[in-house]
Amino acid sequence: MAIEKTYAEINEKIKSGKAVVLTAEEVIGLVEEKGLTEATRQVDVVTTGTFAPMCSSGVFLNFGHSKPKMKMQKVWLNGVPAYSGIAAVDAYLGATELPEDDPCNNNYPGEFRYGGGHVIQDLLMGKKVKLEATSYGTDCYPRRELETYINLDDINEATLFNPRNSYQNYNCGVNLSNRVIYTYMGVLKPNLGNAHYCSAGQLSPLLNDPYFLTIGMGTKIFLGGGIGYVAWNGTQHFPEIQKDAAGNSYGPSGGTLSVVGDLKQMEANWLLGTSFLGYGATLSVSIGIPIPILNEEVMRCVSVSDRDLYAPIVDYGEAYGQRLPSDLGFASYAELKSGTITVNGKKIPTAPLSSYPKAREIAAILKEWICKGDFLLTEPVKLLPSYRDGIQSKKLEIRGL
Image (cartoon, rainbow, N blue to C red; front, side, top):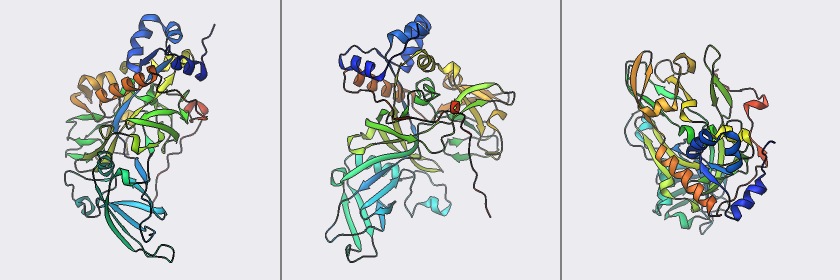
């Protein structure tokens, strides 16, 4: 008889302290030992985690009104511009935004970048941040200039809203050119000098729910050390199955999440301003998603290991955007985490941009919250699009006139 569980049943077990919760790392061994059916019978929830740079992130801020009142037309926080074309005292600060006088704006590679992600971290650390605003002035909002210092407690609302987080899978970046290149995958050495990847592999949330059987709009998650929710699918959400030129399958890719949460409930060690040499600033974000074990199919998905998960090897050199990912093949996360892979017959060192120890810690914290009864599961009001739905990729390119 097929095993079927409901969210209500699992939540009742959580409330009574009887739920069996494992991390995505722990469940692999259980399935190998007990088999899929018995593991499904025993386990109620599997927790996942990821901690990595996630550029499509930012925070909505409501500053409250000054005296006299002001319609903020332009806003800067520690010199970093925030978009204020929303309402009188609302602004959105993007994680990758840079100060207007940053050397990058003059095509100078530079080194450390202070950007929007660092401002967000400074707010979480309780630091004072310089707020500057200008306005053209109106009868109802006469003030034209404002300069002051604020901290997170001085802000009415601070809502972290990240349009694209938790990529289902990501490239393994290499460089076939004969010069050093500076990319969002870090500094890549010439002539296949190194390889960078950016995923927690077997702990990564969307690799454990590749068909979006449980993750959807309204799913409650660990976000930035606090509670958050999946708001929608992320931008550039193109779920698919990776294949090489011969048609061999290399697993899921392309899914993304849009997430939201109260910044005031989050912690600075789980949202880190991050700088990439020669590229720019971003925000490293922590996300943990609980996956309810509703049936054997869900258990089959969460029991996948690094041996069975693959990243496409992509050249970020002169041919970036020209080649197909399959041109250089795929590497399993077990291979990537071993420290070396072989590309075009050459053995090259690998390094992660995401933190596996942090991902493991996130999954463990989420497990603890659930076991204590402090975190109940939410059933999504709408599941996210999956490649199983027959959606067609609409990856558009900007074309010049």
